[in-house]
Length: 308
Image (cartoon, rainbow, N blue to C red; front, side, top):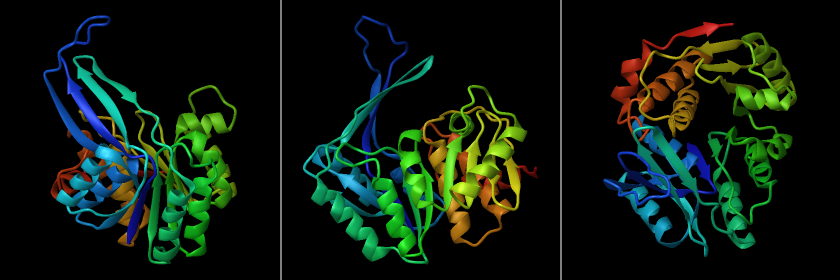
């Protein structure tokens, strides 16, 4: 079973306007509401791949009620800890120039609410499980929270995929997640380099990273595709020549394809191929979610995997 962990989900409110005029009244042509949060995105994309997952996290207030209703409507299994605080609302305003995002910080999570989530993982994770930990943390969660969750997963012999920003990544690496996804820019920062990395540098720094921290490393390299680095090989998923309709959330589709491939026991090359196809399919939809497996399957044969 795949579990996804979203500690700081959000109600995504998307507004559309012809062109944003600064310091003036802007009338939105229409508004859409959707569930947000990287782990929840992964669970929804897993569902599109005809697989099951359990979305785990915190929800509170009216925004939390909306997200839980959507998960039920989409038939996505979930276990959400009800909190006293209100789930955040993120505003995305789209105009002819792209999208402007305004993200709230999130609620304050009480210690007993956090302990309830940790207890859930203690009692449900085992060697048959894959745990995806994604995104940011709300207030009340210490920077060691992901580390604590990873330690519980490792004690129960579950596989852990970690996809988060540098702020939360560094304290979490002490627990040695199995798979980490980062950007090449963050890999450069970890090595105190203020420049765009070459393929050779990504390979060298990536090998050093996994020697110290994990078993597999996924490095997204701007518009140059994604590298999968293990102790024995380096694979490169080259980008397709597609007009991307949405960049927000396509990385979560990649993660969904990756963990579904792992659960299916695919070889590394085929895991990366499925992840790349899921990414491509998501990039062609405005909400960044593949509609179904057929959409993903249509790209499988077009995904080029090279061994470096």
